[in-house]
Length: 249
Length: 220
Figure 1 (cartoon, rainbow over the protein chains, first blue to last red):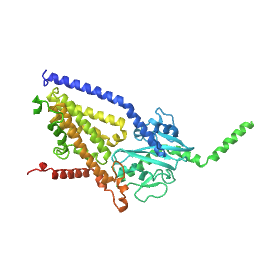
Figure 2 (cartoon, rainbow over the protein chains, first blue to last red; figure 1 turned 45 degrees about the horizontal axis):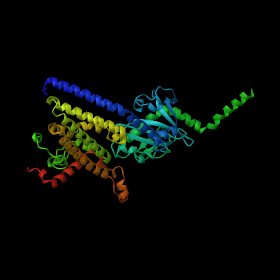
Figure 3 (cartoon, rainbow over the protein chains, first blue to last red; figure 1 turned 90 degrees about the vertical axis):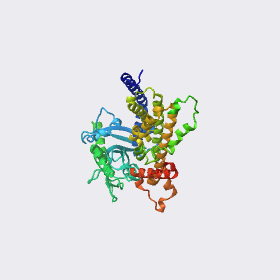
Figure 4 (spheres, one colour; figure 1 turned 180 degrees about the vertical axis):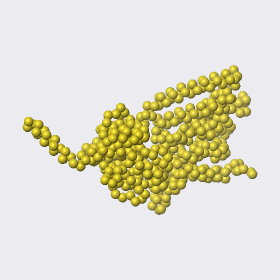
């Protein structure tokens, strides 16, 4: 057959496309479980890293330390069709703060309760994300980790390094004057400010905006925890009284 | 091309075949002599590890693409041959991307979009069009290996200098810190991390190569 005839050309093209399509779909389907597993493991190890836990067997550590996964909307835990772990933060932050359903991970490390909040925002070239872990009072930062897709190496990309992240532990998210963490140019002081990355100003500001924005849905939930942590004894007293009264009756 | 009409058996590593493998390393280097594949050489050479993986990926893709198109060279209709080449290369690149995502996830994240862009690497299409469509499979494999390795080699040289001078590390190992140079007042040169410096490093390599290889110097 003449390989340059129209008929042959059409047949060749059709056969080739069908073969290649079949090959690629087989490859994609058979590798999908491995790829999904990688993404899941990365997320779990990021969450664990924010509460200072690192190790080989991420799967086991995650079930060991993360005791509860809540879905939060407008400051209260809600029921949701999607499990907390499967919430896609990229589409969540696109909604207004009141409409967002966001995950909150409650961890138990040697009797201490920690709360882990996911973050998602914009850097200079693309998305940035991270996790902030809070201590039992729902206000003091225990640790923070950040990641980015395409920030400039050596400049904006430095938010993913220890030098930047190590500034966060001990800072407070909420005070009377400000909610979030301010990223300053070299004059950071006090409980709510950290130093930015020199040469990475836009990414640094991105981190500040990301924290302020992602905090909104959690605010009243965390405030309640803070209030409970500040005055637990006062709330216990009436409960004891009421049981005594019931017993007496 | 003339070798195809010769009935006499040719050794697997005859002088001609060996030159297919070795020529691209120096006198016919795809990056420094033919100036192909420059965009990716600039984009993924900030650090050594992604550069190595990228070099290997391109090596696999050029070799396989050359082999496949060479096996099909008498069946491909002339009018749609560029499309056929594209389909072969694109399919291979998607396979490489999927395999990287499944088994070396951290590296695949660093390379991000650039694995997909292997498709647009002119070296691959160039070798298929110029070589494998007219040569036997074995010769095409050698040609693919030679060009892929030459590309990867330059990538690794460029990434070596950029990571060392720009970041003070090699494969994330803090070499400069270990040598104690920071205490002497040494500072990393952040400019090495920016894309233009990749071109300057490539240009320096070309300079050295031309100075050492007189046959490359234009007579004017």
